[in-house]
Length: 293
Image 1 (cartoon, one colour):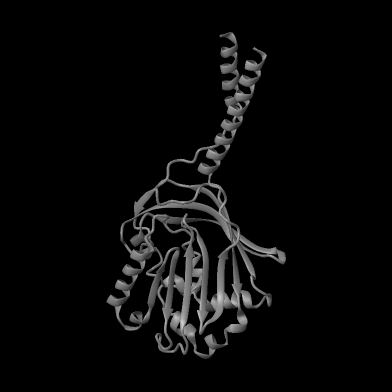
Image 2 (cartoon, rainbow, N blue to C red):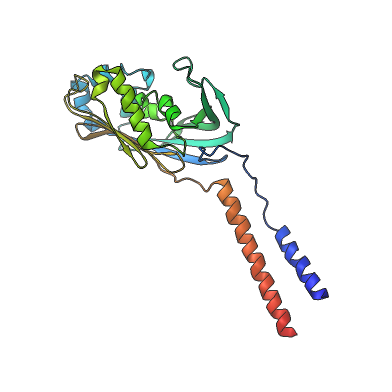
């Protein structure tokens, strides 16, 4: 009996040596990321393919897509063409410093006064030139993960942001509960209600994102088709973006570093591993005692 008491105390003692891990505060089911996660995207400019863009004056058309503004494609070209380097020309790190409590309000005001529920994501982000370490820029900012499919469509300004990688950078996280079929159905309904050139945008839902197509002359002065692909993973993290014109790749932007293990999963791994070690030691000790008896 005394031996059994000692064994129980030993087993409990082993459990006390398990590492302590911070448990993240409760988050909405639509949030697929955690405090401390780090991501690295890469941007590749394929400048040799851009001749048709300038010949067709496509910038005039895309420049009118509200609210791209300074995010439009020409700025992407001008920012990275000067480096005369093979893609990727830049890296875009993103380090989450804190995920705040859920809030509700007019997130997109003054452009859209719809009441939206979202979770703020505070992070340090920026860009780096991999072959010139001294050239980089970092800043602190806040991004938002909205809580449903319709709100995410509004957050992309009805996919206007998809017409430039600089635009898509503003929505690196979709709700992990998003329904891409409903997302595209709603988008097409909005485009049809607007009429005009918007009716010429076709969209297809994918299991992990969507694709957009504007046929030749769909925007009047585009002599060839525009094709855009956007992908997110199961945690709602942007993994890939590309813009093609006439089948030629203009620019792509992709997640280079895979998702880090989330803190909740890390807790499970560490605690589970420690528990298994404790159980194994307990079994070995019991066997030795029984053998000695």
